[in-house]
Amino acid sequence: MILTGPAISAAIQSGEITIEPYDPAFLSPNAYDWRLGDTIRICDGDLDAAVPTEFTEQAIPAGGLVLKPGTLYLGVTLEKTGSETYAQMLNGDRTIGALGVWVHVSAPLGHQGHAIRWTLEIRAARPVRIYAGMTFGKLVFLTAFGASASYQQQDGKYAATDGIDISRLYEEIPGGVL
Image 1 (cartoon, rainbow, N blue to C red):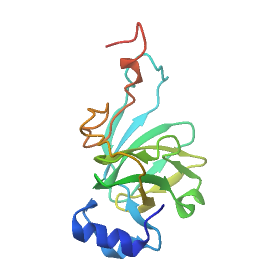
Image 2 (cartoon, rainbow, N blue to C red):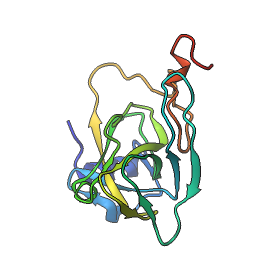
Image 3 (spheres, rainbow, N blue to C red):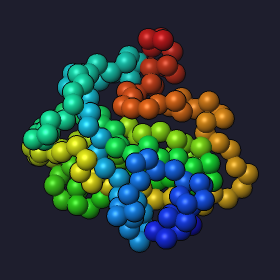
């Protein structure tokens, strides 16, 4: 089941959910509106699952950054979110989608114990200017059924991430760069 805005607020007050920085103005009826952080990685070369992705990293200027079609961008949420009680689901929203920006399509699940700033996969259908701190999507919290298993305690591959992270699939591919 999905938590309502008031239930998210209550869980923040009780410490079951953390959102830093938190602003109650970003609560909606069933979600929290997350914002884009101030740094972006540009992955504009060829991609290969067996080797680490090459990128350039830059701060998003105050005047914004124009995303170009055909380029993979990795961003990061402004907020660090976490919960040992609830699973999280992070998605872009209709507003950003209406600008032709697809964000975080492939990995929306944050397991119980997931407590990081989210790495975002971002693509643009057409050139579009984005800004650090702009609302970029919705984060929902879900009640998990069954025995709780914290992502942090299972030493998940991305458990310690506190910023933008490239794919680490190369660690699993035989013959890949380790």
